[in-house]
Image (cartoon, rainbow, N blue to C red):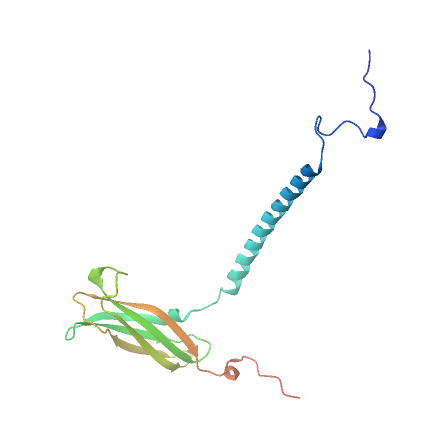
Amino acid sequence: MQYPPYPKTSEGGPPLFPGRRTGGMTVALITVGALIAVAAVGGLVGLIVFAHAYGEVHADMRYPYDDVTVTSCRMDEGARRPVAGLRITSRAARRGTYTVHLVFRDRAAGSGQGVAAGKRTLVVRDLAVGDTVSERVVGPDAVPGAPECEVAEVTFQSTAGAATVSPRPSPPAS
């Protein structure tokens, strides 16, 4: 029985890929593939961490829109214009001015369809923390059918100075 000759130790053994040379191109492709995989996993982990941190930071966030309620929406029979009743309860950390933008529509046109009866803006100045104010706002134009009153936007601007907002007293000057 004849055995094939043993490989010479100086050549390092049989080739890894018979008939092919392992060159720089194979190494480059493996390296680029590994880098893409690491970037994809790192991006996914970063996205998960960002989403978690974003939720934690904004968990107790409040918006001025939450402080405004439309209590009624009716038709003024004499002028045939819509009348909205609003209640603003300040839950802000400091006193301030609320600016409420209202949109009046004709319900017959469908919810969210065109502004048939116009817009009005209500400004309540210097409302203290925890105070409630009720206001009545009359639409600018008459509507033929039942009115629809909607709060489009609410902004809040603090009227308290920074010194009155700070929960801790400032350190004494030395």
